[in-house]
Image (cartoon, rainbow, N blue to C red):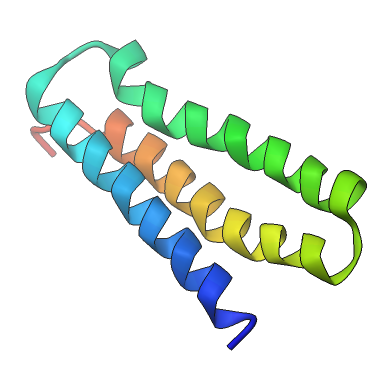
Length: 88
């Protein structure tokens, strides 16, 4: 239970990032706007990794890593989705 709740939380956050990227791709054509949710989530994930490993440390810090890993993967998926053409 202590492992699955942070992982599910990270998946929910990652799906929200993918949803925001999907909506922005329908509305805007600018790459800066399309990449902004993914880049901001990657920056936040990087900071959370640092915070979990250096500041909190120990078992509680591992929960941050369990949250960050799915968010980081979904951010990479959002960047790949934002770079795909609509024609293909």
